[in-house]
Length: 392
Image (tube, rainbow, N blue to C red; front, side, top):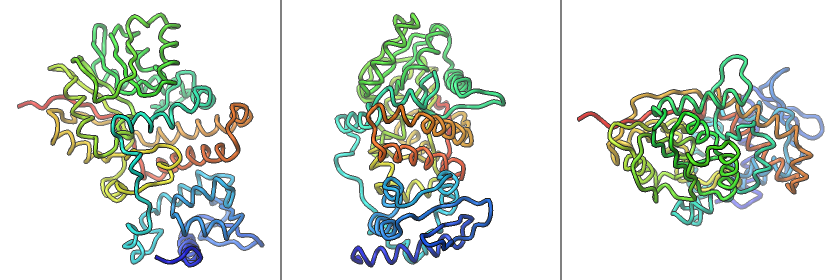
């Protein structure tokens, strides 16, 4: 492969050629503007071109994100810029160079493998950052997944609507024995217990379990909710319903069979499960399955977003379950992320007071903008899969 200066020159040529065909304006030092955008289109500012091209040339999209973190490029509307790029992900790199992709992208580190011990470490790296940090940008429900909006909704209303849709899909009512895989900070378990269900909810995050437990006690529902520090592979017993919201993305492709088999094993005859997951197109998923991205390195180690086809295939090969209904609502995630990013930026001083430095704050802003762009462009989706046993 070319050396670092040569890769930087190649990255510069590819980047300049790519943006000529995109509705984005790229401002360079000295006043030069490139790109196919006009007035009103998103503006990207390359602050330190040599560093920007060196990082992109050396590390591709990982370097692109790192260049934002260091301030080598900037934008008043990073979501707008990233949405333009996301809509053209398949054509940004010329086809002849795409054939070199497997030599140019980083492979996943072995220590991010989602073995039982590895999964605990991967989850801890994100969810154990600080309950106070998440509280700054989440709403009062402390729900960290896509909301489901109706006109006039506040974010908390839309989060409760999403949770109710999951519980309804799984048939959760008074007397239901419910298993939740992935506690979060406890809002789903609380709403299920308020319906009269008896809940076992599992998490690998110490921080989440501590806060969830406190919330259950304060609501007077601790006798109905058993929150356990437990891997999904360790679950025992059977339940009338199983739910899991945006957990499967963290499992990793190698362990999807074990994850879905655990759901199947836990579900009593006649029961239903509802799994909410971020999704991506099958061809994109297969192209990304062995790569190590900026998101893996800095935010969510060890995971892979499944395609709907991958969910169907894993269920068919390893369980008695089938998808009997699917609700898709990707645009709702874009709105959820927009509100999270607004809240995060509005609380910049409080984030700093918690001890998070400027590089972390730029990283987190990029993460939220990057994800929002994925949903706004249609590159990503989100679905609720209702599962039931196949009829023989």
